[in-house]
Length: 230
Image 1: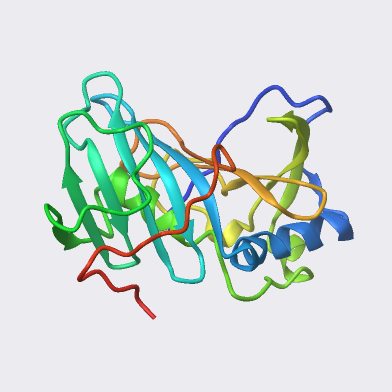
Image 2: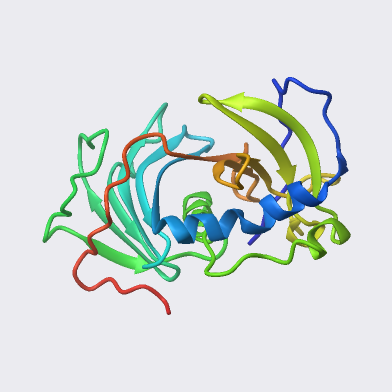
């Protein structure tokens, strides 16, 4: 997953980077597993672009490995508006002139167009793939995270939650992107719950932001003909 470090502001403590404590390492190690344990999470994905921002409001089923939501554009980038469902390999779109703020719980049975998920060159597809990978059926190795460069960088309140901001290991750093930029940043609660992820992708002019619990989670109903990669 191609990613770069993103600067943040507004923390209420001096920023790091500082070495992770054992508690912080444990929280970072279980954060993707927490999403899997939850089954699914409500998400808002903001994808910047030179023609305006795309906002996907929906849900990700981390056990079924599929996401679904409404896509709306701001600025000039409104060509992709509609409904979207995606897996690790396939994107299904349902174009709409006036996309709803939230996707209907039951996807339309027709009007869908399927295409492969692009591995490179599309900030939208990169963002969808990253969001889907934020769930895992097992925790990461907490001992290896600090050894591989994961760090604590700050603390703040986010939507009523006290969170610690941490970077992932250096192994997750991008081969593309501005020199000197680093890893994904995670906003994590005291039990490792993930509330925000901010990450750069090579094809986007600004970082992609993925926020969790921005609305009520609605279980994902699969569009006919779209199967998750096992």
